[in-house]
Image (cartoon, one colour):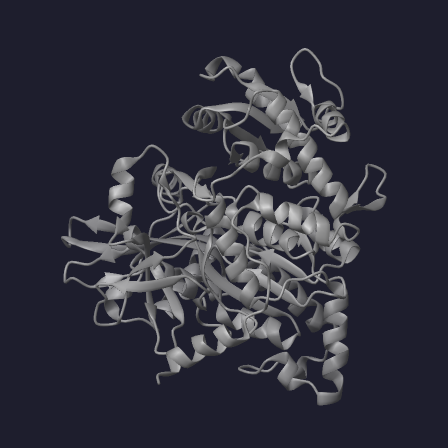
Length: 585
């Protein structure tokens, strides 16, 4: 028996037991009964006072909003939500996906894109924060549908909007008088009830159609390998409209009887972690890297320099008896209860994962897509490999299509989590499925144990004249490890002089590091630091992968809400128009 089979077989025998649901309606009523008096949410009022919302009251609020949606004629309609992570957003999402088709909208999008998505989805009603609803309302003439608006920040109705409290209370009146059409809805688990627009790192956003079975299967699979139960307390930080945070940081937790709090914004992360004391958070690499940097900076201030030796982790260098004290202080700075961080959305340095693990925080990286509800593979409570994105989650399989000599090929996925298809896009659907498998567009390889490694995107592969493939993400990871570099984007440009493709990099320098070396660095000084960093990276690579040219950016990369750099579009175009440095290698 191969080692690959033994790992998966072991997990199958030891999966965490949990209820399986076909729809979120089933899940909602089950948790409402089982955990009625348990805390579902820990919230903060305007005065800063923390208060709890029980599962009983949460279910009642979802029913009330659902009944009001029904009474106002939105059964089976597209129901859009836009706003920051909040209790009202969570309540509305569950009500909307049961009454009709929920359309979560990214609040960071330009108003033109929001209007475009509302028109494509044919949304009949928009519920959300005043800031975003007001902006949409200003452009109401651009909407094709006769759209209604429900304002989360208003209690009462006015000439323009329904107030959320009044909207919910009208449904509550029916509920309290035993008129509950919401509970009588009969859902087909395989019908579309979720329409999510991809963040479009390649500049091509599509509408992803998901069913209740898609979402519920992912909740069950992840919960079978990562323990989430009534003791779970999570701080919701990442944008909840994104399926990564929504499925794993909201729905999985609710289905398990855990409790959720909401971060008040990126600048308040540290304060909120100390305040709510979560034991699990979801993160993206950029956030995790910042946490690690702060930990290391505080240790360097507190401990003698002799402990910070090259090629040795600080926890291995300090005396054995001091390690529990150091761990305790680190955990205290993170609220005191944090034990696990789930990270995804982009590659991360394995050394950071190993380092945090030594500090007592297990970081589980994974791989997923909106089209897969989202998780496909993940490190878990049974097995974790800091260099891989994990093993296939239960009931999901993947394979590598047409692998090259290094075992690298496109990742194909099959399972109950795979989307129904792209919304009104037959051409994209034909390209995206092959023999029952979804073509992810991502490149990867699988080792003999079954661990998946992501090597890049099909569309971002740089192919040189002699047929060699260069994967930008590999080079970016090496560049970003260097202390002088904050972020990077590697591209391939055709060079007419050499009649070949040249590997280039756009660089955002780490000015804090450079200023520690030179108090007032000139542009030339910064270029020299970056040139030296690239020389170091090139020395570790075969010649065909060498970065031949670089540009120093004077503004941030355009990113998606999960902090992925958008590989095409404005990032490249804007730099071509504003090339402030040409540094041939």
